[in-house]
Amino acid sequence: MNMNDIFPSKFVKAADLRGRDVTVVIGSADIEKIGEDRKLVLYFQGKDKGLVTNKTNADRIAMMYGPDTDDWLGKEIVLYKDFVAFQGKNVEAIRVKPPVTKRAAPPQAAPVQRQHVVTERDGYHLSELRGQPTGTQELPEDGDEIPF
Image (cartoon, rainbow, N blue to C red; front, side):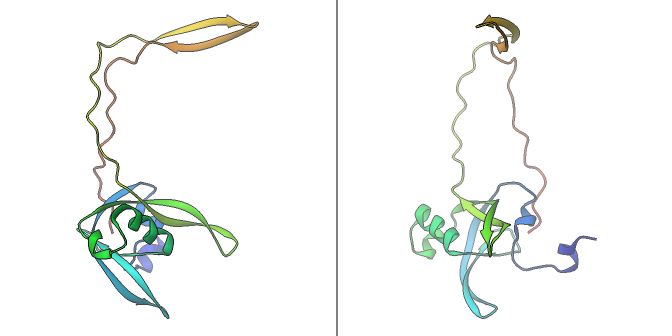
C-alpha cells in the first residue's frame, strides 16, 4: 500500500510529480492557515491539490510575472522536484520555473547516414560517430495525467 493513498493530502508533494516536470496554470492564489502559520497557497486549473508556496517559489514566480499575485492568475509555471537542505538533511521539494517556450524546429537537411570512425591521435585510438542521425527524433507525448 502507498502511504499517499492511506494519508491523502490536499496539497501537492514532490512525490505527486512522479519525477516529471509538470506545467500548470495558476487558477487562484489564496492565503490559508497551515498549522499555526498563514501561507500563500496556489491552486491550478484542472487540478485538485494546491501548492503551499515558500519564499523561494513565491520569489521565482514574482520574477516571472511581477509581485502582485493577482497578475499570476492564468499564467503557466512548471513544477519540478529538487533536493533541498532542510533541518540538516536533504529532502525532496517542489520548485517552480518558467515554462519552456516552444520554437519552430529548424529546417532539416536530407538524412545523412552516421558512420563509426576510428582514428589514431598521439598513440591512442579514438572512436566516434560522424554524420547526422537519419530521420527525426520525436519526444514522447506526456500522455498520462498527473493525479493532483
